[in-house]
Amino acid sequence: MPLLDIGANLTHESFQHDLDAVLQRAQAHGIGRMIVTGASHDGSRQALALAQAHPGTLFATAGVHPHHAIDYDDATDALLRELARDPTVRAVGETGLDYNRNYSPRDVQLQVFERQLQIAVDLQLPLFLHQRDAHDDFVAMLRRYRDKVPAAVVHCFTDNGQALRDYLALDCHIGITGWICDERRGTHLRDLVREIPANRLMIETDAPYLLPRTVRPAPAHRRNEPMYLKHICEEIARDRGESPEVTAANSTATATAFFALPS
Ligand SMILES: [Zn+2]
Image 1: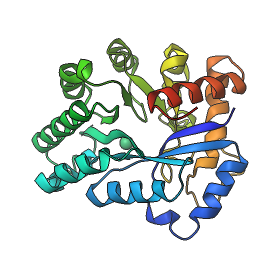
Image 2 (image 1 turned 60 degrees about the vertical axis):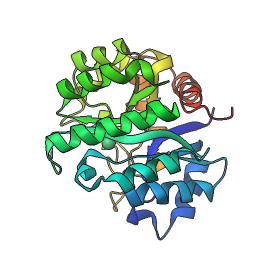
Image 3 (image 1 turned 45 degrees about the vertical axis):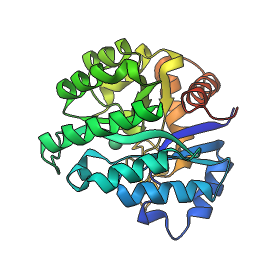
């Protein structure tokens, strides 16, 4: 079963010089399709253009990451709405709250998060969500909109068991990255990943970030790329006590349904 990487930042400058080789390596490792994350005004436009250049293999999201919330204005809102009407865009996001870095003030993050929630409501698209050190505000906001949108994934879930159970109670999907391979800060995920029902679990690299620390041999360049999704899938399978084939088949089926992709 080909894997589906639900979060790859393929418009990142580190992929500019060799994207075709990156995509070829992904195919060779069994990664059939990837969702290119849109995380800023320009980045969302680029994500769509990149996906359109690789029809059937790449799809995109359109959104503004909380780090960039301070740059969100009416023109951004209009652009996201325009991009999200393109059938290649399969979700609104990356959006949410990040109180870990606070690159944008919290009140601005909240406002911009809510504006993007409204886009998902208006266009009836799934949400691709980011939450870091902001669970209480995040879940309170999400609760007000959850039943107005078709689906929502908390991407790169790294939080604790209570947060996981809050999201599952809201019928959210959960995205797991190579963070689970990090012996310094990800070991709690090895237990928690067992609590995620197969039809709510999706897997992602978040490339070029979060190179799984258990990849051997560790590449010298430290850049993560979609081909390592296979490794992440194997690690998650071991933690869940199931075969990698089962994890692959279920996560791909779940992601295919979530993003309403042709099967
Ligand atoms: Zn994120």
